[in-house]
Length: 189
Ligand SMILES: CC(C)(COP(=O)(O)OP(=O)(O)OC[C@H]1O[C@@H](n2cnc3c(N)ncnc32)[C@H](O)[C@@H]1OP(=O)(O)O)[C@@H](O)C(=O)NCCC(=O)NCCS
Image (cartoon, rainbow, N blue to C red; front, side, top):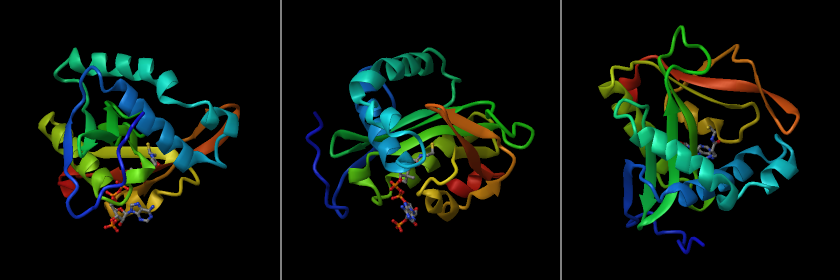
């Protein structure tokens, strides 16, 4: 159980760091809360209602182990607020789509809704972009399901719409993908 309370944005201590073993439950909690906030009415309720830190933990444990086993693996960053896990950003190379233009992708970025609008999402994107740049990457993509209520976040960070990305099917429901691209990731840091 996460006992974090909504912090005062003026003095909350936010830290962005690499993931480590033991973070998997907190990451799964932010992931489940983020999906429920972003995809209600887009993906089936039974899929969203079935998501939890207990179910997601093992999958994220595997993803953390994969990241830690290879120094050159794409960044997998976590945001802590006042010592608890508030969100994360995981990434892939090459992108799952549009790999002719983009050479890296934030595959998932989720901030627990209790901590939205505190600047955490922006810091996660910026730190991921810096690490990608250090790995020689230059153009970054983020995709999400059409109808995602948070598209203004990606637009605010300067992401340009990317078309023709196909669709994603979750629980039998097919939804078009929308994308946001940064052809020069230095604009993010
Ligand atoms: C998108 C998300 C990561 C943003 O995280 P966040 O920590 O709340 O974002 P920030 O506080 O860094 O926001 C930076 C700026 O983006 C814009 N922004 C963020 N959320 C917004 C919203 N809901 N509506 C309008 N603008 C928004 C604002 O301009 C904001 O700056 P401001 O608060 O000073 O006005 C978070 O809302 C989230 O986890 N959503 C669900 C996840 C998701 O949709 N993931 C899909 C892709 S894998």
